[in-house]
Each structure stands twice: as C-alpha cells, then as structure tokens.
Length: 164
Image 1 (cartoon, rainbow, N blue to C red):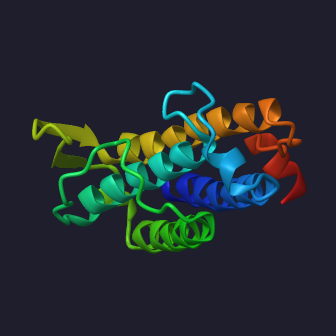
Image 2: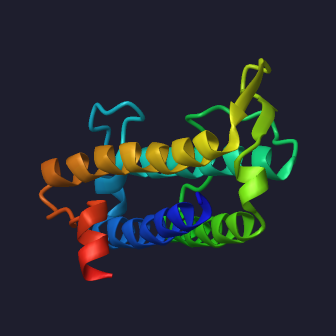
C-alpha cells in the first residue's frame, strides 16, 4: 500500500537531486560557498546538510549507530566529491527502500535523535520526513540559486510526474 508511493518519491528524489546539482555546477566554488544568509549559510553547506540528514535517517532505519554528528557538518568540501556522495546516498536510499516491505512500513522505528533522546515514530512517517526534509532544503538551495543569478531548475513533483 505505501511501498509504491515511496518508490515514486525515491525516483523523484534522485531526479530532483540530479537537476539541482547540475544547476549548482553553474556556479564556481566561491559562489556555492558564499554565505547567503540562509539557515546553513551557503548553497554548499545546505547540500551537505541534506546528505547529513539522509545518512542519519538511513542509519537509523538500518539499525546502524551513526557517529555523533552535528546537523551543520560539512562532510565534503569539494563539490564534485559532494555530488558523488549524493548519488551514492541516493543509491543507498533505493537499496534500503527495496529491503522494506509493507509490514515493516506499517510498524514503528525506535531511534535516538542527535541529542540522544529516544523516540518511536511510525516507519511510514520516517520515510515521509526523509523525503520532505530533502524537498524543504532543496527549496532553500533553489532560492539561493535564484539570488546568485543561476536559473534554478524546475523541481516540483508534479513536473517530474508529467515528464518522467
């Protein structure tokens, strides 16, 4: 019941990430790292934050103890390394989702947040949050691209559905 929906979101997610990174490549390194007064400062830092969030959530789903990280951690200073890591994380997301079944999606995920506090959340809402979190921060990067003079790509889900 939920799995096909999340598979669609995973495909959309990869498509949107690819389009966003392609557009960000239109800026030089200084332009991507310029403090644009956004929540994570720069386009580059925002893209790193999306990756940090994905790694934390996928680790939780897979039952892997993550190293203690801060949500503003810059995992990759080099843009091409970050782009490669993003593609690899999208591959991982697909693999983790492929290991899901409806029974597990109907269950809960017990985990600890970055402050170490325990939580229990329905798995389908964890997946929804993971995709929503990316969409939220891609939107921030999209806005920063506009202000940087780079035409931002269309990233709406409905556009993906119509063209995919």
